[in-house]
Amino acid sequence: MPGGRLTQQERQQIAVGLADGLAYAEIARRLGRPTSTITREVTRNGGPTGYRADLAHRAAERRAQRRRPAAPPGAQAPAQPYGRDAEAVRDYQESLTTVFMTSGLPKMMARVLGCLYTTDTGSLTASELARRLQVSPASISKAITFLESLDLVRRERDERRRERYVVDDDLWYQSMIRSVRDNAQFIETARQGVGVLGPGTPAANRLENAARFLDFVGEGLTRAAEQAREILYTKVETTPDGTAEPGPEHA
Image (cartoon, rainbow, N blue to C red; front, side, top):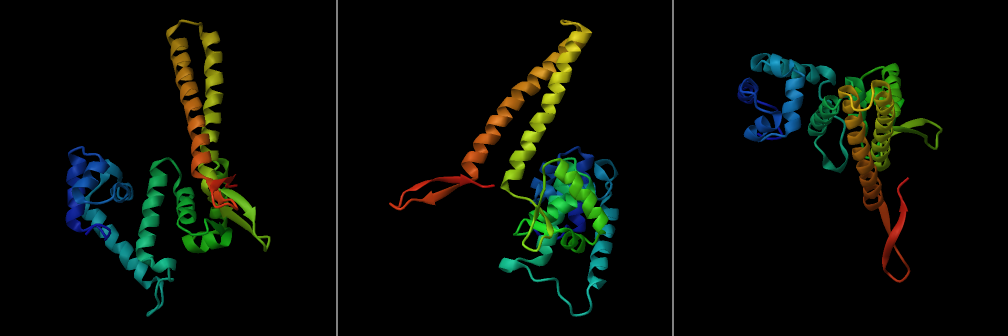
């Protein structure tokens, strides 16, 4: 059933779909599953060329068996706020982690980001992350340094002077602007190459076309990011006469 664990039959259908060259989204549509579920299933079991339904099913059974003895007899998973299903939250966090990995993040960095995004506060300390992910503090430190360099997390101090790692609305804007800045460096270097290789030559034309494309897209992305930030992340405050007016943006 959608939302539950994949069955052996579903895994066989995934294998058939991969053999037929179907995209993950199409396989997911046929099974009535989220695309992220199929992406995670294939990624963790050999990829599109190495996926084997029987091996994937046995691996899933072993993972399920390993999870059960982790807690003492009679113990239950920590209670989730808002009446959430703890196992469903854990599975969703794995799906989100897989999406981050397929977008290019290394596994540990993707796990940290997935953990942060599935907390209501959007912030955790290093020790909290290490405990939730069952990894060493050194692994968390390395992951945070990497994510911070991409403007995907930020650091702040809480009232107890502990360092917390935060994801919030403004980080997507900052990450987008950083990407545009990175492209600007390529644009400048590409146009230097035009002078070196000679205007009008095939190599120079290739670099000039790349620079023009990225320049055009970068301007559009910057405008869109600024408009989205202003529209989506601006608080609406009520004036004394009862009318609404824009307030300050989220920090």
